[in-house]
Length: 249
Ligand SMILES: O=C[C@H](O)COP(=O)(O)O
Image 1 (cartoon, rainbow, N blue to C red):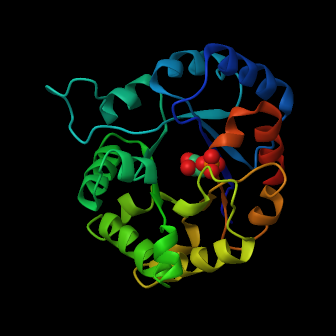
Image 2 (cartoon, rainbow, N blue to C red; image 1 turned 90 degrees about the vertical axis):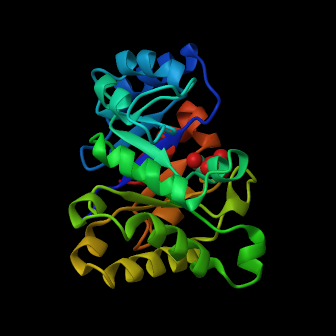
Image 3 (cartoon, helix red, strand yellow; image 1 turned 180 degrees about the horizontal axis):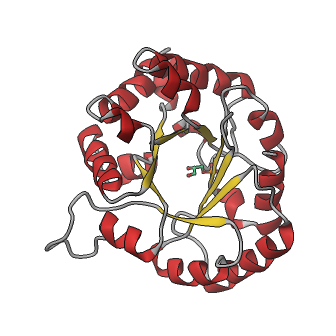
């Protein structure tokens, strides 16, 4: 049985007021123990989020990390720093990092390894562009991204990775993958993993991301291979995000 996970990726959005609003809302929300919730605000709000979430069972996540342990990398943050601060989860390979900051599959692997070495739980993001989907290459793209990142890892390391399938064409567009489209890719991911390790394939959590909202979450989360969501825009709205969390019960 996999514990559902709902992660709110604020991207470069938010404020101290929003952190506080979420802190109050989570304190009143009575989230079920059977659900894991992660909040991923921008770095400057992590401190406030740690305080606001101190008495609720919501974990902290970061949106990226530098692959190096330390050194002359102006503006960057290492996995060790995140871990020391109290962060549990970190995104790697988000399509915005791949597109806007030119992170390659090799870069994604380096960050994944750095996160694991720091004792963090990485959420590996994968997904196809609209062009790739229209050309019938969805599974090729997604499985290539996953294979590149996971194949060199030890089994114990692989077991600490969560995968988020985010079709690029569905991110921030309001155009959600249908539950059937999402399930089809999730099932392919799990089947691919089963080729290496059937036990791990069953245990590994797979999240869907891409315009998930309060209205469509329940149907997506009802799919057998969707274990949670990586939520962008709707994670900035307290009521919507809580509604998504409750959909995952
Ligand atoms: O990390 C979250 C995803 O990119 C989804 O973003 P979105 O819910 O705004 O489409």
